[in-house]
Length: 359
Image (cartoon, rainbow, N blue to C red):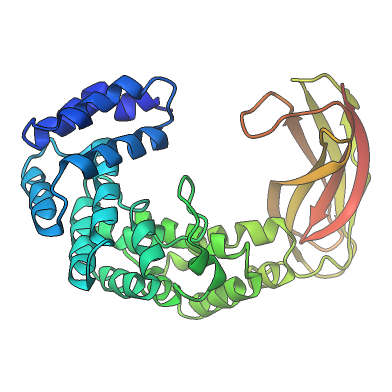
């Protein structure tokens, strides 16, 4: 993972200043404050300096950026603070400047995505921004088409929330409908991630959207739908499971998992084994997950679902499944000692469980 210094360090800021003609002393001086700052904090620092040093009115401000755009070196992470400054300036004036700013953002996004800067436009005028984003869905550049989906995601990583988007799960339906069969995998993956975001606030809407696409698919639609429904599948949502062909697991039996070791050293791992059987006379498609109930600092437990396998169990079949789970330290989770629980989940239903100890 590149560091903040590699992405937006002093040399990158120097190059940015050079792209603007080399006459931005305050922007150049921001690098003296970079020590210890995250990438987003550096971006805000440079953005604010650009807003103070570039022209205060929109037309000459845009002209400065368009002049820089003529240079091939005007690219990469230096674009992030520029796009953020553009969003602030464009939304501080009238509708003509607003629209012009969005158009310029679309031109900047092939140099570096404008998915963060567009949030300022969405906050300022959601409907106007969404109407423009919808026109981008037919753009010849895949980066601009992706911006229409990625920039309007309700829970975009690294980006601030746009409350109007989270309050209206159907606000971006037209955009997603226009892009789910896009020729670019880059765009389609964004659409799937966008729909997955929506599952946090309106699972029913997401299932219906996925069902609609599945009724008018192309060769890439099944993969997109599976990726879009991944969180709902982990959560055992019956609508999502049914859409993917995983019915309620009537007749499926799971044995109690055995763990080796059952007392796990912090930083170590345990291997669990269990048997899955189909007691019916028909083949059954199964999505098998396991759930670790981690101990929290206050002694309560927090469940986390992990994918294990998908397969078809033939009538009367019995299969032994094994998985090793690591408790190696990771940045996204802190482990606490105590009694943990392990559950086996099949097609959203918890069929077997046991406990083990982390110490």
